[in-house]
Image (cartoon, rainbow, N blue to C red; front, side, top):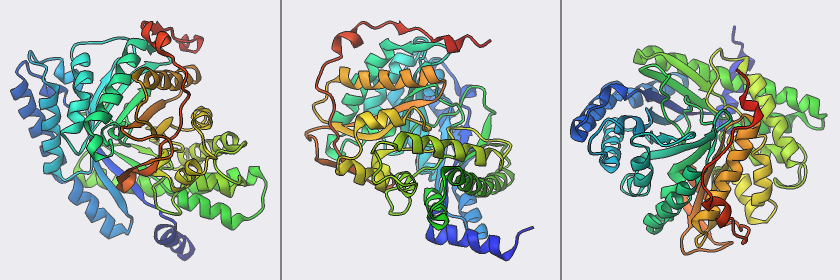
Amino acid sequence: MLNARDILETITMIQDEHLDVRTITMGISLLDCCHSDVDTMCARVYDKITRYAKNLVSTGEQIEKEFGIPIINKRISVTPAAMILASCDDKDAVKLAKTLEKAAVACGVNFLGGFSALVQKGFGPGDRELIEAIPEALSVTDHICSSVNIGSTKTGINMDAVAMMGHVVRKSAELTADRDCIGPAKLVVFCNAPEDNPFMAGAFHGAGEPDCVINVGVSGPGVVRAALAKAGDCDLTEVADIIKKTAFKITRMGQLVASEASRRLGVPFGIVDLSLAPTPAIGDSVAHILEEMGLEACGCHGTTAALALLNDAVKKGGVMASSHVGGLSGAFIPVTEDAGMIDAARNGALTLNKLEAMTAVCSVGLDMINIPGDTPAEVISAIIADEAAIGMVNSKTTAVRVIPAIGKGVGEELSFGGLLGSGPVMPLSTYSPAKFISRGGRIPAPMQSLKN
């Protein structure tokens, strides 16, 4: 039973504290679109996406109006494109990317994710062709997002794929240098990628998922920060309890939207991803939550501990609010997408080394970080390898989304606009990992993999 206090509290969260549903994402399987002829395959892909998702945007807008809940993005995720590309005699990955772009535009969605490959244990048919096409594909499309899974706790790390991805990230930046290097901002390199992730740029529709499904990603760092501010001086046990209770309320809203969208679209409800996803807007920052706990600036000593508390409390509170929690679920720390992170990076409080430590306890990894434009490909590969090792050993998802700022150096800025935000170029170590990366092969799976 809702009472007046609950209703007023929710209204305040939405109007003043940036509470929203960050995304409704429709996952669509393309496995039945496979064909040896690439044109026939592309036609099937376009027809299926537009048939299933034709009412996705309008349904989201109706739910927004009727419930008064902002739904910021309506998105689509599809089967990793390399899987269906494998069936083609002519593996023209760019043609497939353009088809996905055409479908995204026809459906009116913000992004379409799934121009992806899963190569954690090796390369299958279509994988190399897709990975090599990523830079061009991201340069000729506006709505397509790409991801590559290069490692897992069960398989170890495919270092040949890691070496490839350093060159792919760099080339993607070079091809979009005239647009502030937007290409790699739409590319994520994963270890332990979840197959039901609704958040871009890493979303794809896993092979074990239903033919079509609705996943919802909620947000609300501003709501959590406001709740802590109202609580005043309390100990960290109370801080954790406040975050858990707030995460519960946020997730219940996401559950409502997911169930309603599922019913109206006639599509099964998949999961609620309860991740705290920040934006560049003031008051919608994960960094500001950490500072509300008592840190002078995000990045100072104590930041990793505060983030661990936040991430755990969000999961504990959210999992009680929905029977189907999935995706990443926790706290994101994308530097250019978080107003507090941007400020901390600009004033030097937040460094890449500290960010790497924080990724051991957060939901994703080194996310939306601008690096010097002259960074060699092997250094990018080494950053990916470091982050993958954290994920592999800790049995968690980690990822890298770094943007080489072509033509720019430390302290200069890139600006992407919208949710992708802006931020300074951060310094990297100048010592070379080239010989290590060139060895190739696989880093073996850790002992944690032997759990069967």
